[in-house]
Image 1 (cartoon, rainbow, N blue to C red):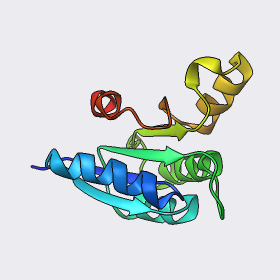
Image 2 (image 1 turned 90 degrees about the horizontal axis):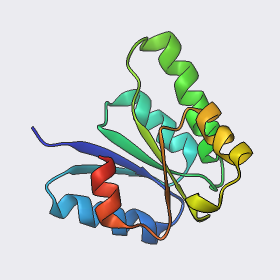
Image 3 (image 1 turned 90 degrees about the vertical axis):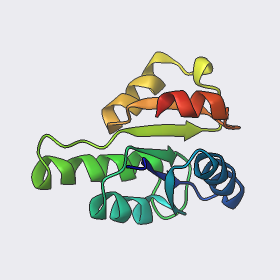
Image 4 (image 1 turned 120 degrees about the vertical axis):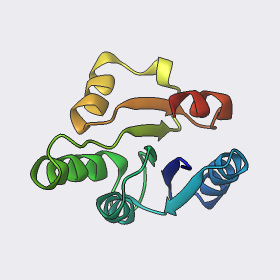
Length: 124
């Protein structure tokens, strides 16, 4: 069975870059261009992982993840989809308080952009 990922990013370039790399590795890839669209897709399907941009219009990655986690607690208890934050800020430069914000939102992993594809494959 093929593995399935969701790429949620307002950047068409990032969506295409990540999608193509995973499609070449025989993954099924869905995309969303904002957090609200991403939440709807995550509610409708089960993914091996979702890669979620943080800074997006309509609904940012923090809000989207919090909304999904609240929905999962009610509608899918015990079933939590892994979410990897993709951020333009270098992850090692984050302050402890910023890292706590990621965790409190319910994000599981954090990776920096530009995307390091070998690292993203390891995350999956």
